[in-house]
Every structure is written in structure tokens, then in C-alpha cells.
Amino acid sequence: MNAIVTVVGSDKVGIIARVSAFFAERNINIEDISQTVLSGNFVMMMMVDLSQSSKPLPLVKEELDALGEQMGVSISVMHEKVFSAMHRI
Image 1 (tube, rainbow, N blue to C red):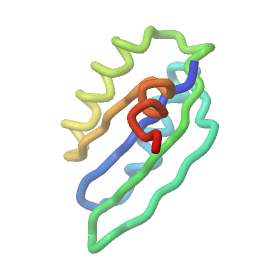
Image 2: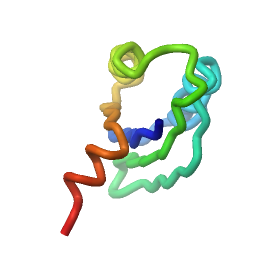
Image 3: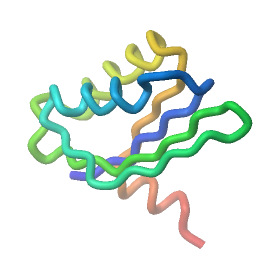
Image 4: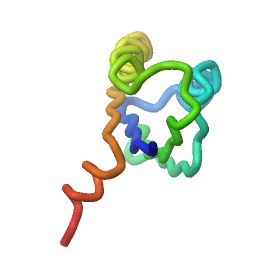
């Protein structure tokens, strides 16, 4: 199962490293990643593969919320199918 992860907040050192380490610790593969800084705001979108995850998606979401709070950024996770359905033209 794939999911879309977005990370948004003030740019600071270590955002990509901490989020990537979070996924590695849970055996979640980052399939694709795009990031940029817009006027001092960090914006990242990732496609992740949760098929081998050591934790279920609802728990991953809770833990990412907590990580985002610690880091001072907003992290959201959405199942790929929901994301695709929301962004159809």
C-alpha cells in the first residue's frame, strides 16, 4: 500500500533526515520525494510504500503527528487512492 506524505513548516536543518529516519525505523520505503523551500517555508511531498511496514497506517499517522509537533512542522499522511480521488480533474 502506498501513501502520500506532506511536510510543511519553517525551513530548518534536519527535516528530511528526521522524517527519513522515522520511515527507515519502521521499514517504510520512500519511493519518491520532492522538496523545496518557498520564502523560508519548507515543503516536501513523498510517496511511501507501507507494504512492509512494522506498524499499521493509523499508528504511523499518530506517530508522524507527534514527530511533526516535536519538529514544529505539519506532517500529514493520506492513502494514495484517497489522494488520487481528491485530485482528479
